[in-house]
Image (cartoon, rainbow, N blue to C red):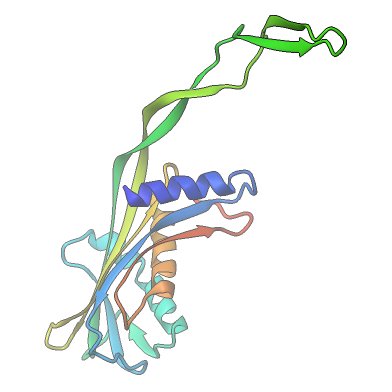
Length: 215
């Protein structure tokens, strides 16, 4: 729910500023802070055994490239004796976002009284008038359910003894974007944001460059 609320607020804030695609999500990860991952360590990026093999395999090159941009020098999808395995899994689901929207009271002809005092006679005269229009008043709130889609990229880093070093789950929410474009976005953005030293749990928001299409 926190993710959905943040996404809605972010979209509303920027919708009047630009027509560019806005993407928002959540980044959550846990890490063994006692392990120092050397940038020269051999890392094998492999598809998770529990996920869609074709989908996970497709984005290995994107993740390898993103890790190299982070300074890791020995990363590939084919390592004979790696120091670490990075297991990746991409999933998606359709869900319902619940929002509160205001209900306005647009009543007209609400009476109001205006009084004047005559400075010479000190007589007070009051006139009752009727408003033709009035500012809308919020009389309550309705709940509106909107279908949307959540895309998730989860990865786990383990050492040679299969000890878990890093476990991370990253999401992005959008109602109409292509699943493949969202997975591509997650593969690149998630590794760019990855924290290999401290646990993370925070939302993020990105406005894509002009001309970007997620369909």
